[in-house]
Length: 135
Image (tube, rainbow, N blue to C red; front, side, top):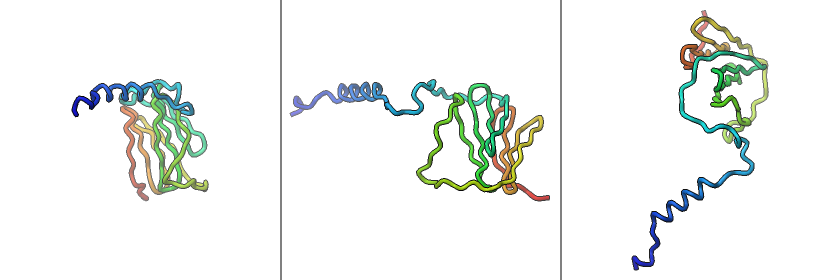
């Protein structure tokens, strides 16, 4: 009976080869350079477009979006190309007027609302969040 069983290793290798050859025809990321794991460099620029801030190290780009006073969204595009926004879990939120600021000092950029601060450290592009305090 074992003579009738095909070589499982050959079958597995054939399946792997077929998967590597498969390409989605409608893939919006087609043509983007392969992603190589590396750390972000020093942010060289900060640009604002409405409620979105873009920080770049020359190759990668980080998008910081103020959604509400309590929600700041961060996305990373390793080669500065963001895919279209979508979510299976979060409905589209209507835009409301939100007060926010971008400040910069020698150590960091800071995106702030009345409820939360997003700190982006200049030395290594590390970002973290902090609950805003009122003085």
